[in-house]
Amino acid sequence: MEIKAADVMKLRHATNAGMMDCKKALQEAEGDFDKAVDIIRKRGLIVASKRADREAKEGCVLAHAEGKKGVLVSLNCETDFVAKNENFINFTKQILDTAFENMPADKDALLALQIGGRSIADQISEQTGVIGEKLELAYYGKIEAEATIAYIHPGNKLATVIGFNKDADTQVKKDIAMQAAAMAPIAVDKNDVPQEVIAHELEIGRDKAREEGKPENMLDKIAEGRLNKFYQESTLLNQAFVKDAKQTIKAYLASQDKDLTVFRIGACLKYKADCLRNRHKISNDIRMRNRHRTAVFDLTAEQRNDTSVASQYISKAHCRKLCRAVSSDQLNHHLTEPLARSHDVGRVDCLVC
Image (cartoon, rainbow, N blue to C red):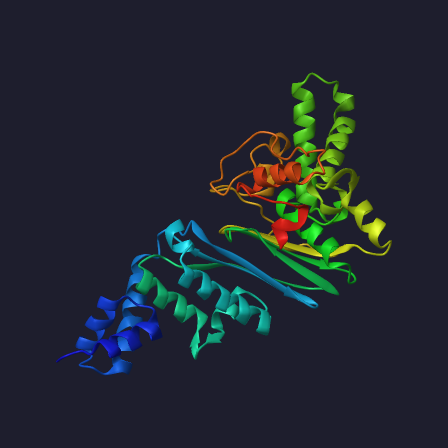
């Protein structure tokens, strides 16, 4: 039977499938629109099952915060080409908006929510068939605090959400969100670092001191000193402020409001997600990952020289050393090295406008 172009376009708009796929589905369904939609969905499930063992290494990371809540989502795909596709980004945004509206308890609960009458899980499977690549909701996290802010780095590969104990000036909140994006803290304060991470750092400190020929009775003291340096580099409140390395984030917040502090932080880098970290309760799943390796325990070794400085996960030694700069050019250079993206900025706040 003859298939009208208008019917093909209607099916394309409903499913995002290609023109030829829509035409073939309509021909197979003998012009029945609903049957054609079902055919495309079933094909998506078949493709999804065939590609289940594929790695989804690219993706889109988005965040949104408003009032007292914020969310982060990461939708993965196989290629950067798809990750940059407008339809893929819009689909990720739909998931983000649904997450923010409903604040589900976990990723499984989010996948069960519906968009347009169909579950997110089903729509991801269907889009796998349409796009021809494995799609996967890699990460979902939420924050609830007295005040929140979100930051998405250009390119949708990195996002952060920060929760504060009280509201603050918008620029102050943006500064903290950018700090978390640039310096990737593993916890809010040193008291929030898991004991297993502390034990690992102390072990590394003792081993390095022993290799350097230090006396055995001095190893613990030396390890404690190196642990304190780790706190300064790896916990948000104790990090040097990227816009003024002479003061810590804790001091910067106190200069704005003596009672202001960060309550929670959440960060997601590309398709490998950092967990949300609570000031009073930290998940056992704290991870900062490079391309194929876990996280805190790998990155803490050798002064975290193995940590990635680019979205391609290329290691570079001492990448976390701070600049002393406060000018926009120097700040731009400092942020682009760990975030691996160049910018033309005329002022400091351009990165978060």
